[in-house]
Amino acid sequence: MNIDFFSLSQDARTSLLNAVHALSTLGTYSEDQNRTATTPFLDTINVSLLSIQIETANWNNKLYEIIHSEIPSGYFDEESAHVLVDADAFSRSAEEMLRIQSEATFNSKDIKLATDVLSVIGQLKVAVFKLRKSIENVIKLEMRMQGAESVDEASFDAMADALTSVRKSKTPTVLH
Image 1 (cartoon, rainbow, N blue to C red):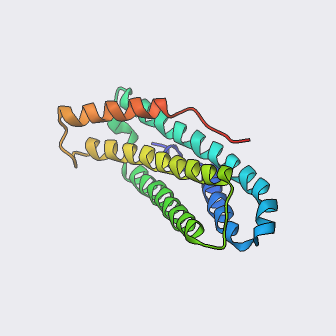
Image 2: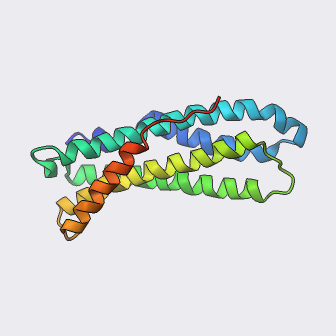
């Protein structure tokens, strides 16, 4: 299998890093500067959000493609497993960095954030979580194909439920 199939796109990697950086800079402004910094922050986060949501949709499509292929196990080999682990590690790291940055921002008594900024931070955290879960679903399928997990009816029902919920969450949300 082509290892690029299971790698995060460069656009998604850049967007994750830009979002973490943008959030980390919120605490560096005084209250007056923070009002001025809000618009570029929202623009950066909205672009990142869209990119992350597109990447999540791509991972959901990959999962769908694998499940509905004639030979799902043909998608997985040793190289693809390593690339999957890298994609998972990158998304988990970004999620953790966002968690740390947002907690520090929310806990700071010096930083007062507008409602739209708080909202977009929440949307960003949810989008990154969905991306990580999409990658995780592909990894779980790969493990199932390798026989590492027992395959029973309940796990297939859970996968079907996961796919249904993922399809419902494909609609990107962008604040203006």
